[in-house]
Every structure is written in structure tokens, then in C-alpha cells.
Length: 240
Image 1 (cartoon, rainbow, N blue to C red):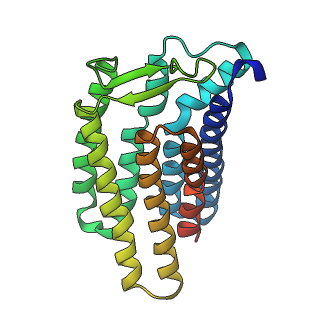
Image 2 (image 1 turned 90 degrees about the horizontal axis):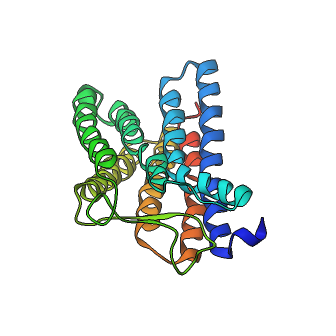
Image 3 (image 1 turned 135 degrees about the vertical axis):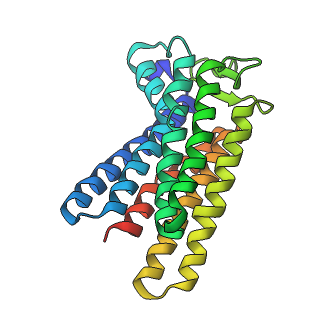
């Protein structure tokens, strides 16, 4: 198995797997706790954790496939669908949670806007994914690392890239900074919970952005290890 992957492939695969497994484990645990406590917000948080973790399902799947069979995913576009299909569901539940906490009166208006935007994103993702003119400018194993796993770069002139940028900025402002504002207004335990949620969402946005634009494997590895703590912060913010 070692012969089939270089160090970059191992780093990429292990760190992506770490995000997926940590998010799914904490997500399922949150769902279990939410049933016992009848805590709706913890239910939503658990679903968010799972969907956010699935954003790294492409590299995780390719890592295990390559390790076991020596072959990468084929066709390579499967990698894109495995990872980026979860953008809209993660966005939907994140905005639902944010709306419930921040602006409950206008929650469904907020959610409705992002449902429409998420639907547009998914349409272009599934109908026009392939390089060089589609959603991605590159999908495949880098020529410089043939013993690695599949990677994909957004086509930065395509509507899907623009929409992802809008989604990340919206999440940073509304969920990250917004939770910090709520923390400033609160006291005691409630203040701590808002801070935990803010840290979780800020980690998600910053790490997702860095993962997409930074090509240096070691830096991406560090970013993903930090990203793997996202579910922990979300759980701490809503466990009671």
C-alpha cells in the first residue's frame, strides 16, 4: 500500500479522512444527545457537522480506493460530486441554525434565499463540472505527484466559484462575526456558547477557503487538522 501513495498523497488522504470521521462521529453523537435532551438546535448542529465533513468525502474516498486497489476514482468527476454536492445542504442547515439563533422572526426568509442560491449552485455543479470551461479548471492527479490522490481546482471565472465565495463570506459575516456580536451582548455560560459557535464557524470558513486556494501540501495538512476541530466547537456551543 505504501508504494501506491507518495507522502503528499498520505498527507492529503489522512487529513481529509480526519475531517470526515471527526465530523461524522461528533455529528452522530450530537444527534443522539439531541434525541435524549429534545434539543432542536443540537439536532440541526449534528446535521451540519455531518454535511460539512462530507465536503472532504472526495479525497477521503479516493485515498482509500488508491490505497487498496492502486487506482484513483474513475471517472474523476465522481470526486467533484462526492465533495461539492454537500455545499447546498451544509449551507441550508447552517443558515437555519443561524437564523434560529440570530433572527428567528426572519429565519425562513433567510433560509429561502440560500435555498434558491444553493439550488443554482448545484445545477451548475452537476451540469457543467468539467474543465477547462466548466465549474473546475482542473480535476485529476497532478502530473508532479502521480502517486497522489485526485485534486480539483475551481474555475475562478465560473459562477460556481463566485457563489462559493459568496457563501463563505456570508457564513463568516452572519455566523462567525454575528455569533461574536451575540457573545458580546450575553453573559456567563451563554456568552461562552456563542463564542464556541463563532470559533467553529470561523474555523470552517477560513479553513475551507485556505484548502481551496493554497497549493502547498504541508500547509493544507495543518489547515485540515485545525478544520477537524470544527465539530468539537459546534458541539460545545450547543450541547445543552
